[in-house]
Length: 507
Image (tube, rainbow, N blue to C red; front, side, top):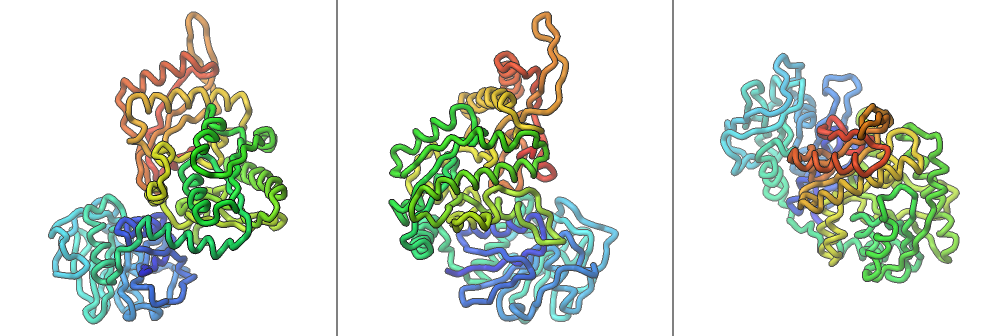
């Protein structure tokens, strides 16, 4: 399959380049700048990402351009464009007119990269340095009011560069620019489809697993459900699915999830390990420590069940690409946002290998694959739910009492979303129990109880998200119902923070 390589210099939005290419049905892979793979015949082009670094820094990330420049179509984005300019004889300087946010781009010369793009179009900038002189043989093709060399190309080879970010939604015609590069300049076939993914993945799983048995942790969420059906298609009865009650699930979720799998042909075992998880979380308050404690008990639980299933050699997980990105980061350059308990392999003492059939997919791609597999819409359309569950929605120490309060408030919120027809308009929603108390009045009595925060965001890929603008009547009704019905809560607030700078979850 044709593919484009994206070399990551540490930008927090590098994955969005891949996300936009996948929207064009173009397959791509992202690699750290210091781990460039071999330029196989299937590689049709290379993209250099942005970075939090300056090319003028002494320890700025470097890559050997001779591996691909002039040999394959090349596109530099932001840091990538400045790196190309500097390495090819141009000049990059700190700018007095730094650009952050929206800017108006004006096309000044015809270019295959900008074919079909409006002569004036909005783009998204995020850079402090600027290219003050282009390399020999390069010409400017677009400018902004503050930056002359906002986009340029080399005359004698298919090498292009832009100082803005075509991958973000705020660049109005960014998808057109990336399509010009991937489809026209690189000549990629638009054959990355759910059907092609299913075909190649099923074949790959059969070769990888052979006659071994696999256990999979089902959660009722989209990712694990699609992973389970995909594995079932590949290896059938070799797969045993285990749904663990970690004590951190939503109200009645353990029983309803088990029931939802009855007609799907999956071999599912229900395992109640809630006491083990809660014991491991006793006294733990720091978010990363909670995630790691939950991950440890998760591994221990599966290890126990794996030993009871003769021939089990693999643990399958519904890891998706945003999990991998947020758990990783290029050492010294890109920050690790948070660890995901199903990323990073298993302890040496656990005699299982990991198989992650969805590891390279974004959430909406997982849903497209699920629909192609014929999975019921009620499962495919479910909001994402974090692996650590309510454990990271109880801020501070997790106790059964707090979880029960949170479950009741969360149930009211989610039911209200469904009742008024807003559930499907929202990417993810939930309630957070805050570790403070406030004074209230109920009847003639003083109360001193916890507030809860409602969280609801819209997104397409979980890498960026914005808060949902609820009607005031909806917020008032939900707040009133929670305070009336949930003992232990006397105040409701709504979180109107976007990602970035916040994350979707609070922990």
